[in-house]
Image (cartoon, rainbow, N blue to C red; front, side):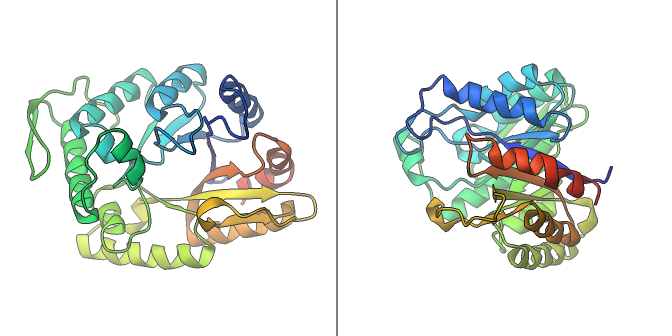
Length: 301
């Protein structure tokens, strides 16, 4: 098998008027199908969306870590503002220990202002949120490598903070997003993974060139960073065009052969991990076609 891996973007939200008990059943029906083909489960980090029931990511991730021991689990991505970074370092370290080293720690600067306001969090300017993100990353690295750990920043600090047992190995850090000035520079300086959501191959190629330049500046090997893509797929027998997705997000659509060729474009750019959400979910028609026709071709690339 090649080095290509597939991840399922979970969807623990009661969509389309469905009852809340469907949130578990729908996802677990998918997880039963993808065992042995997909290797990771991914969670975005929101508390509220569209006035419908939604499960909190970290609680759900911890539940699934125990229920599905064959999967690695990642966050794509945690909003750094929602939890104190030292507490989050401890939470991630604990789950890394309990799960036997299956956590991928994804984080971003945060963006959803209405969510911040509703839950009583300050929503500082973008520059401040990125400054906070950088300090959070520094705290993570320090707390996962030395105990006790001390750090003094402008926004966050720790003083003789213990994080025992130290995670072994430390969870790989993923920084999500494609911002060319700050995000990709933080990837180059601190992260083990990069993740770009909703990007065409042309956009992805450009962002990778920006990342390569940042790596040169900070003295990092570009090849050491895992490149991952977050994609929405619509797989149909005749390549039907999907309905528009909110926010005009890029959706890859086509028949299985067309989807295979499009995914291979990313692979040729250096992408080795695909995080996938099928826009026809909770139907499994698109997923079933993918598993039958696309996954074998991708995993043998």
